[in-house]
Length: 307
Image (cartoon, rainbow, N blue to C red; front, side, top):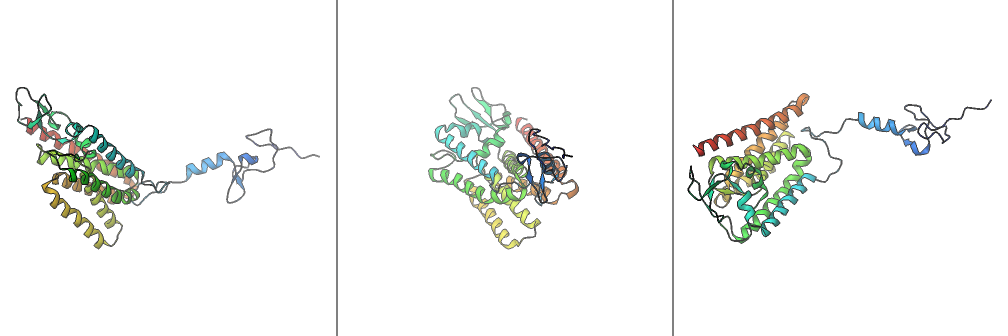
């Protein structure tokens, strides 16, 4: 009596006598996937991948398959592209910089804000509903040419220093937090810096990624403390940032630096100490609450400025 002919369950025209060690269906060489014992079929391999839990960092972020700090590089690229845009269109700074309240004339000249304004001048800034400035300003830097914002050498050093700091800090923080949490931290820190500028110095114009960078510096400190690392070197590093905040107060926005530092510290503390059993929910809620508080402060300040 002849044995029954068996064929591949996916390719019926292919005769085979090898079966999947998991589901026991017959498979041809094209459908075989090597396993620790025998071979698995394509569908069993897919099912096994779905059932494997994705690796997570200590702070709950998904461990990226690639070691490339993609978000950091994208942020650096955006900052550099926008700066190149400033070289072509210097007016970008006036249009998208962090201006809380100001007056502009028909020729584009800017004047000190006064409630009610003046005939022939129109109100500009966050006070006039241009809330986008709170974030767009974080991707701008001091122009390279002579202007009210800076001189030739400092205009170039401004973006160079920020990108160097972002490259050094961003890679470490992104690896620890994961891409989504890291991006949320960066944007909230940038926003927090702009909000503090609006609260304390609404008549000033501020630009730069410094608020977000200071937020990353605070995150770097909290992360190392949470992981139980030797804090001597970390303390010296953060002290250097604080000294820079004091030194740069004369020609940059210390309010933006401080706002980013405090925001970054708050966000990372929420990330680091959220209870493991509901970590993602607590972390997301903390970010949402912080965002809502920042927006409420903007509304209250706008109300105060407009009377």
